[in-house]
Length: 146
Image (tube, rainbow, N blue to C red; front, side, top):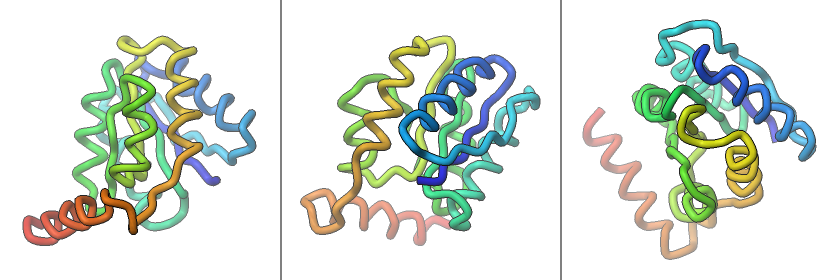
């Protein structure tokens, strides 16, 4: 899988650990940087790259993961889930078809974050599952509102 990673300076160490973990799992990882203190910039860049099909999924990080997830979700077609536990990491894909995830460097330890990434990447979405109609409704709302 081709993955895009980005973050702010507070989360540079976490981002690099996640890139290394993704590569160890056999994924291709591109670093969109973590120098810009305005995390919305890199989060939007990663989101656009995922939405335009250059990357399969995206991973964004900041102090809490909240800011980058909010910024990424402003890009039409980006569906970024903030992860905090293994069940959420699984359901981000299985139930919600999230094409991006966010995590916080100040709220999630590096080893936990690597585990969450692995869980997220190991799952896929089945549009014929019971969650399919729920995700379809999210897409309809996006079209109605944007």
